[in-house]
Length: 171
Image (cartoon, rainbow, N blue to C red):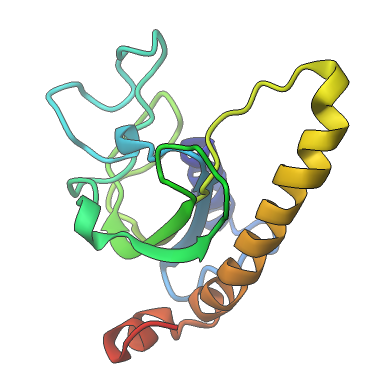
């Protein structure tokens, strides 16, 4: 849960605990998933932490609107994938400002550099008898391709060069 992880990072930095380097005042957050979690961004009139359509507290942590479809960049293509992304894995990176979300313990006003990796695969229900074949034939190769595509993006994000590299063109 991105909201809980961010709250933990903030708490450790404010308390001077943990192994985080908080000297820059900017947090780095990598999010992965098969769907885009628009509820992390402030997108409607529900206050952060209030109960939303998922019958749980809304994990809104960012003040800005969510990234648009054209802001996502592909980082891997997975063959024979019937998912809604048509076998493409996408990423988005940007700087966001946090909002107060007392339910999750997130404090507003922090700057967060976010890397969101959206996988090519959606949720998968696999019958027990064919699980081994599906994992060997589909999931393992797809995960390998996505990992290889994501590796240079993650490295550039962590070393701080991703935003500069994106201005120069694709990886």
